[in-house]
Amino acid sequence: MSQRLKDKVAVITGGANGIGKAIALRYAEEGANIAIADLNPLAETDAAIKALGRRVLSVKCDASNPSDVAAFSEKVKAAFGRCDILVNNAGIYPIKMFDEMTFEDWKKIFAINVDSGFLLAKAFVPGMKQAGWGRIINLTSTTFWLKIEGFTGYISTKAANIGFTRSLASELGKHGITVNAIAPSLVRTATTEASPLAEMFEVLPTMLQSIPRLQVPQDLIGTAAFLASDDAAFITGQTIAVDGGMVRH
Ligand SMILES: NC(=O)c1ccc[n+]([C@@H]2O[C@H](COP(=O)([O-])OP(=O)(O)OC[C@H]3O[C@@H](n4cnc5c(N)ncnc54)[C@H](O)[C@@H]3O)[C@@H](O)[C@H]2O)c1
Image: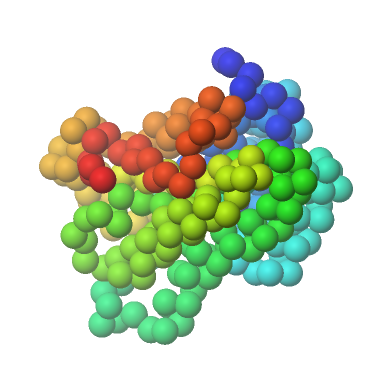
């Protein structure tokens, strides 16, 4: 395995499980130390990172809560001194028709899927600017380009992730910081397996993807590592669909 991220410090929200965990392990394999902010930190994820010879800081943190994020960023700075790579991955994808959605539902999904990225960037961009180097990677979704019912809240937040990516990239490029987004298709995780989305595991890849198999978190980690590395130093403001050829944009 190449060591493109050797001694970098990567912060990953929602890194205990699912896509975030897969990215954390790949970053550790490529030499990064890892800080995870997760509602439910998992000892087995921490152990897997340590087994790769890297340091891990795992903190119980609601990434949508300003005081939790402030406490987390202090811990990261105390443990590692800085954050070089920020992956805004924590997210939820409840399915609810617009008629059934309350304003509370709307505010909750925006808090977790959108506010979290703002809070984490606020915490770590000043240090990246000081270092003259940084990477921010936001997880969006191909649902943004699709006709799907029951996802008005979710797709609205994933559109906001793309807007945040584009606009922040415009301001941070001059500081050596790139900001990009990754848009997966439907991915098998413990959460999607336990949700009604599992009913689409067979049909969706064959109907909508050029590569007709169900996506797994490992399909995303090469792109996540590339975007975090110096190899991607001149790519910013982009949303890269890593989706087996589902959407073209
Ligand atoms: N799984 C998919 O099909 C899919 C497709 C496209 C995009 N995405 C996006 O990828 C990201 C990760 O999805 P996943 O399927 O791996 O999710 P997941 O549910 O498998 O894992 C999410 C992790 O985030 C944590 N988390 C949830 N809310 C949090 C909060 N408020 N603060 C801190 N941590 C929190 C959870 O504890 C969990 O460890 C999300 O942004 C999601 O929108 C997922």
